[in-house]
Each structure stands twice: as C-alpha cells, then as structure tokens.
Image (cartoon, rainbow, N blue to C red; front, side):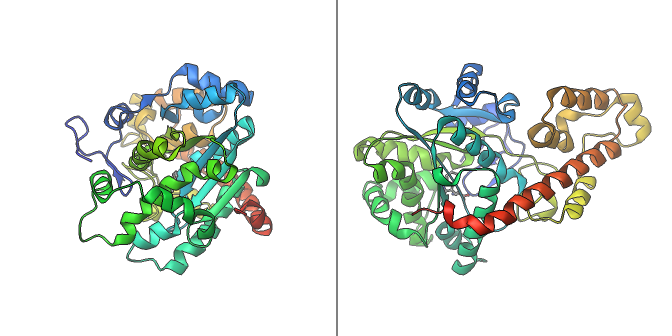
Length: 376
Ligand code: TRP
C-alpha cells in the first residue's frame, strides 16, 4: 500500500500496521464509508442499548452495513464472520471485535463463523511450526469463548483440522481468483511460497460458508480491523459470480500499544497486555506505559496532561471505563493538572487486574466446553 503525504509513516496492510494511524485517511485510502450516527442508532435499536465501542467510535468505517441491517429488518437471517491468525497469545487489542461480535450475535440472533488460520500463520512465519499454529488455534479459541459468544450460534474452526468442512467451498472460490489478482491485491512475487497464494481463497471462502452450509443466501457481516480489507475487496468481486451476496464489513480502530505508536503487538510483549498475563505482571506493564504527561509533576500541575495523546487514557476510553461521566472526569482532571500520571496509571492497573482475573476464570471454564463451540 503506497504511503500518502499526510501520513507518510502510516502502514496498514494484512501483514503490517505501523506509524501514526489516521482513520479519516484510512476511509479514503480503502474507499470505505464512515460509520454514521444513524447507523450506530440502527445497530443499537435491536440490541436494546448502544455498545460502549459504538458510543466511543471504536468502529469508524463500514462497507454496506446498511444493507446488512436492511436484510435483518426485512426478516431475513444475517450472519457474522471474523477470524484470527493464531501465531501466539491473544492480547487486549484482539478482543475488541470479539466482544463486539458477542454483542451483535445476541442482538441479531446471528451465527458467528470464526476462522482460525493456522495454515496462514504456518505459511507466513518462518519461526512457527504447523503443530504450534494449530495448538494456538485451540488456545486462542478459549479467548473467543471468554468474550461471551453463545455455543449454539458459534462455529469456530481451524483451517487445518476442519478442512473437510471448508475445502469444497474453498476450491469453488479459488477457481475464480487468478494469479494476477492475488499478485495485484497482496503484492505476492515469484519467490513467495505457493501456499500463500492459495490461502486468500480460504479467508474469502468463510464469507459464504453459512450460505453454503444452509443452502440459502445469508447476509454476512465481518467485524474486524481495516487491515484485512484487501481480502474482502477480492471476495466482493467474485461473490455474485458465485451466486452469493457480497460480504459487508464494520471496521474497528486499533487499540494503541502501551508503548508509543502503531498497534499492540505480540512481538513486543511490553507493548501489550495478554489475556494470560499474570494480573500483577500486567499491572506492572501499565505502570511502565507511555502517557501524555509532562516531564515533571510541577509542569503537569501547571500545564495539565494531554489525554488526546495518552495511551493510558486510550485504555480507559476503549475498554476499561464504561461510565461516560467517569471518563469525562478523568479527562478533565488530567487536563487541569489535578490528576498526575502515577495515580492515573495505578487506577487503571487496578481495573486491568480485575478484568484479567474475571476473564481468566471464563477462559479456564471454556476448556471444559470448547467442543460445543467448534464447527460440526
Ligand atoms: N488473516 C487474519 C490474521 O492474520 C485472520 C483472519 C481470517 C481474519 N479471517 C478473518 C481476521 C476475518 C478478521 C476477519 O489475523
């Protein structure tokens, strides 16, 4: 993806996200539509409440979400699809769309197809064996379950272990995608392994999987970060040829890392809080995080902090402070210099610990009923 002048350090591709992310520019670059207040209200109407992620504009962009909602309003079934490249442990940034899927699943009584791309990660990463990526599929599935998805409406699958459920549809898709398309969309070259050039057919296939299995067209919505967009552009181009409707999308922002710039990354453990971090250790990462504070406490009291560039504030905003009034209070206290970074971090660290204790309980429980959530 070529960089433009305004954000020339911003890189957002399926393999790399770095630099200062400007979401307005991303909407333009990817040619998506901004998520309007009206659409947020429409989503909330069926849920009975507006999810915090919608209130806080964690979702900023979409493709044809209005059509997906129209389908539901017309009394037709709608479905959800998202996925994960199982290359390691899950961190808080990954959870944003999964929590949102659980919310949408409940509101729209929608089946969720959740793809674990252990094949993709094996093909893409020199440092991982196939056994390792497959093991992460099942490990990461526990995190998906802990987000509150419902067993009777959820179909988690591993591309390798569950290939029998997906291969035929994958072949139908792959027959309609040429080498020049994948080269143009993903930038593959002659030195890439051929597995990588086939893999996009499997990621695309899931958009139609519910329709295929049920023998009827079900509108598919993909909640995910915008970096996966190239796959969906490719899929949308072949959908009608295959007799299916185009997949629709809703895009979430990246949770900022605890360190400066880009997104949380599993390759930099100090930048992210993992769902399996010992709560005390996670609290220490929070205490060591980058903030929008001034050099000294004296300056902070005089000038106030800068929540708009503060990652600690971002954590309150995206995940941890659900109470809008309390969030505004944090912001104002910070700006006027009354709240110093140490105290603010300690407050967040406590919330992170409580969250992890609860999440890890749910995650452990998921080990006993994992099978209920897998594709059958
Ligand atoms: N390619 C994604 C990754 O590397 C995994 C994935 C497959 C996915 N299907 C998806 C992500 C659908 C979001 C939505 O992480």
